[in-house]
Length: 330
Image 1 (cartoon, helix red, strand yellow):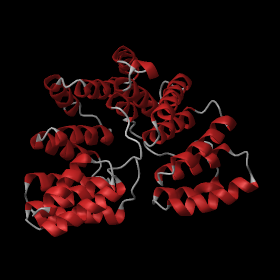
Image 2 (cartoon, rainbow, N blue to C red):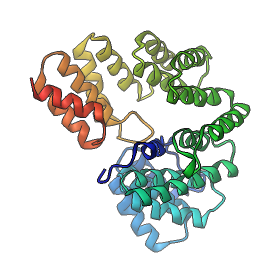
Image 3 (cartoon, rainbow, N blue to C red):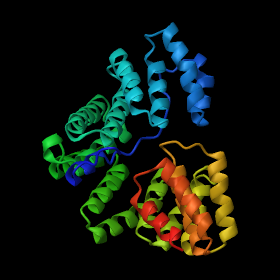
């Protein structure tokens, strides 16, 4: 980030991307391109879709997939341009508005203060529009709530707004509403209440594997490895072939300081076979845990290399910056 924003503004942009999914309007000719997208071949997708747009500039689904691809390549200005075209061509598509909001939010992170404020307002507007168009768009609901719980009132944030939308979400989908409420409690450092709520969610016996991964993330960060293990086990029972399990199994072994060879193999397999996509555990995070693993084994030069690779993908991660400085002194 070239320009550091004041702390009160940095919180605006904790926007967590939703699961990448093709628009219902995607036509069969785009099926192969969509497969490339799902495999993480974003540059190839961009090359094909630029030509497609030139031939048919009025296909909203093409602009949307192009915007998603630019987003994954972290070229947020081009993502905004493509997603704005998609919204103009299909203004009633909730998913298009939600992704445009995400792109505005990410662009804001690297912008100077006044530009960031304007982009923040656009972010909120798009999330709000996405929810108004389709209240069943759970990812848009969560994006709107996350924005409001982190943003100051000057750019349409605030606890009262977030709590109202959490209540609305609980009526539509109680489990998703609980997740949002747990996240709200975490941002307010009401950790005892958040622990209790996420434990209740873990006991919900849902068949939605993403819920268990979100619970696993929470207890991973809380260093409650028993609860994290329960969440990962529940995810395994839901779908033992889910590609995210390699990451979670590897991370759990690193944190438990058990079976280091297996932990490394799992994380490297994840990096080699799963694309770096915003709806999946990031490659930066997998590299961070490889660094942590090597550091625990006093393999400091190898740890430093993994931390550097992690920072190449996520330069603003302060914990990795600190870890790199620590191992470089060894």
